[in-house]
Length: 462
Image 1: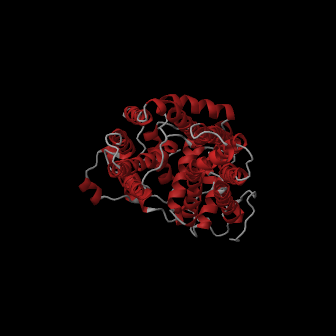
Image 2: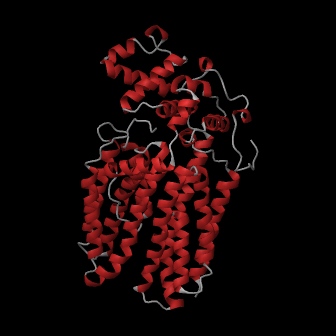
Image 3: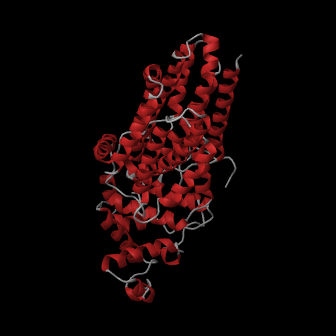
């Protein structure tokens, strides 16, 4: 594959020679086949001893290398999900195909490039805080008034979260994925040239749409340059394929198949997926057109789900004791897959502990005491956020996943927008009041989490 690729080129299966193999000759991933065995055995009540005696084989009426076996896998998954449309069937087939390809170069590259977005998000939230003293010294706003610069950034973050979330369900993930860093890089560089406090705050707001002495100028120019370099890497050095399930929801089945072929090609693997198999299991293209979702239907579907499946946004707090917090994400990676704990248990426990530790922070003004509880709070908060950012997109189906996560992120940013307002006003009366408000919101979020209706552990997202 060439080093530089045309980022606007639409893919076709003919672009990836040698990738396709017939299903009968394919190598199915062992975890996919064993998952079918476990679900089927649980359904009919087979004991562990019986499982060992009679593993899946053609003699038992199931073969993973036949269209009938694949259909049996799909029907078992759909029976558990409660949805059975042409889109659901074809989306599940695509899930199986991607699972059979396995984790490879494409996914690891995408993992790193997605990290650029999270890096930019946290980098600019920290960066604006570091620029406040410089803005006061150069432009004259009081140390209290200048905090509204953070509000300007969060206004942009609210707009960006809602706009790009919905837009990704309309124009696709690829364009939204790349344009966010582009806007953040351009306006990040422009912030360094601000000639007034109001103008600089406005540029921070514009920057937020992308993220969703003069030391402060050099700092912002540096951060803007770093962000723009990350955009260049995303756009020119890595060819991001459009989401196959987004393409499927838009009636672009051939492109969805080509995308899966492209992922297999990048990973140096083969795939059995073809339009014929999709039509065999999910119906013909005529049926597929009926399953195509309009923009209004996408938004309506998402808002209906949002009313019952989402929670109030978590209060945004400053990042504390980074090196202590990092292991929290690793622990969350392990606990979310433990039976009877899963996503819901992990996020609920970590949230309530975080809220308690926030209140404990106010007990003493001793620096060592506060550092200890700041570190512990960061540790459990990272567990909570790690699960939150994984769980949120999992509960939405692919056609409206961008809209759902965008609305959730927008509400998160609205809470973040309130943080400096609370700090400026309530903090003057009682310095501990903002901390009490933060801890209270964590505990309120914990109560809401107890009523989450969906556990996504060991379930495929459609």
